[in-house]
Image (cartoon, rainbow, N blue to C red; front, top):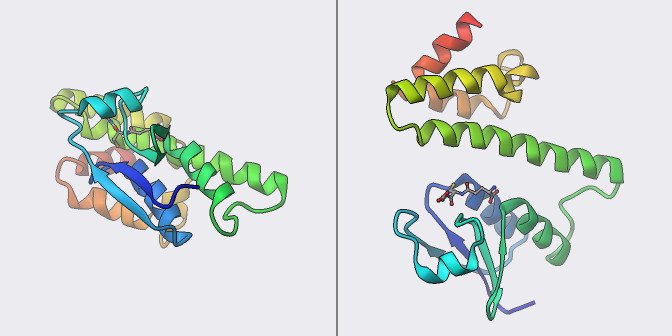
Amino acid sequence: MPDTLTLISHALCPYVQRAAIVLLEKNVPFDRVTIDLADKPDWFRAASPLGKVPLLKLGGDRYLFESAPIVEFLDETEGSRLHPEDPAERARHRAYIEFASQILNGIGALYNARDDTGFMLRVKHFVQSSVIWKVNLIRTVPSSPAEPFRSSMRLSPRCSAISMSLRRS
Ligand SMILES: N[C@@H](CCC(=O)N[C@@H](CS)C(=O)NCC(=O)O)C(=O)O
């Protein structure tokens, strides 16, 4: 392992936070380089096949991309394992990582809507397709870890439309 890992980041990216949380949880020292996603530097374009953060720089010209493989790598190489020993439990954890990714993708689509019409179409799609509602995670467990997410939606006037759609569904 190199002495210091570098997390190539953007301040608002939840996928970057996923990697940062694992690094912090395992007390791994790391540097952070924040890039402007609206004006991607050439070195970043060369290192990131999908043009997305996070990247984890291992040293030299070695970079890892995609948050899930990055955190798997960190779990395998740094400190004690966060994943459980039992293979079935481990598979379940990995499945919930994918579950979370799908929710983040849905939220990301809301941020990236070009106008109100596009936003409302994406709200509808998110509400209808999102696994989060299918498992009733939010509606049946009021004090669940999902509560901050629900509260943040309430705070946004634009997102109050989501709550209204949910009450109707
Ligand atoms: N599947 C990727 C998603 C990462 C992602 O969507 N990153 C966004 C910022 S949150 C990004 O870099 N977007 C830049 C772009 O698409 O041009 C992962 O898990 O790492």
